[in-house]
Amino acid sequence: MTRIVAAAPRAAATPRTARRPLRRTLNTVLIYAVLIGIFIFAAFPLIWTFIISITDSNSVTTGHTVYDFPASLFPARITVANFFNVVRTYPAIERAFFNSVIISGLSIVLTVIISALAAYPLARNEFWGKAVIFGVIVATMVLPTETSFLVNMLSLAHLRQIPVIGPLLGIGSYLGVVLPTVSTAFGIFLMRQAFLSIPQSLLEAARIDGAREGQIFARIMLPLSMPSMAALSIFTLVNTWNSYFWPSIALTGSQDKFPLAVEMLKLKGAFNDNIFNTAAGAMIMMIPILLLFLFAQRFFMRGLEGATK
Image 1 (cartoon, rainbow, N blue to C red):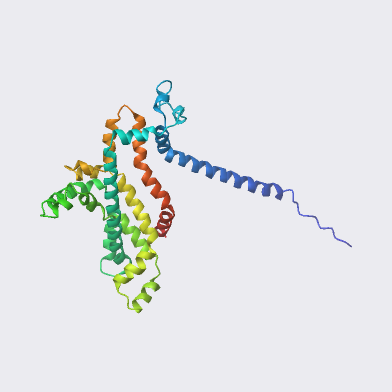
Image 2 (cartoon, one colour):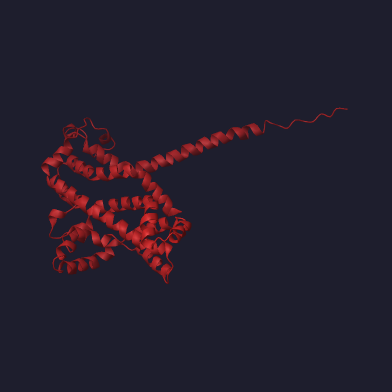
């Protein structure tokens, strides 16, 4: 006798299978919507400033103005004359740009060197109080930078009194702006994490071959930590390039050494009736740092990945 086995009901599984692609599609759409919203929220000031900088001022003298939103996002005529107006009307911007390059370059080089030298013993050497020292360094990250301005100014004033080298290190000098900012808790933390990610076996093999600590540091640790050093350089560049308050007081009496961030305030005063030139000046200040970030973006991401492991 042949037994007839009832087939499993497939009708109930079909809707559940059909709902999975729909749910996955909805999740993807939701993720993209959130990311696009965050991008617009973060980049909108930059986008609007760029649009104003390339808007022909003669096209908005009648009708709507740049403050009419969203009409000002669609300029009637586009021009680059505003950028030439800034350079022609305010020639000091070239000197300010040169000052920003010097201050940022010195800050990057000294910050990377000091952070790497401080992070190496904290990562690879054993000594009494290492954990306490590292904890105190990390704790300073929560302190506002304004708390150190008074001490830094007094130190620079005393350095200014030293014969011969005083004018190079004290108030009113490039190094006077740079020196108080090159030892950062974030830089030491970032480089320490990069050094910890390097296998201990490499160091032991180098020591067996007779390498000294200086050789290990220069020939093994630093080359393998290039992504983290690139990330630290970009962070330092952004902070230094956009710094306003500290350079404005550290360069007291030496206005010819003011960087772009400080001179931008004068730019606003010179063009207080022309927002197009002011926006063009802001873009001139932002373009170099954006180009450098795009060029070093790959190293920047790799450096952050190494720091979070």
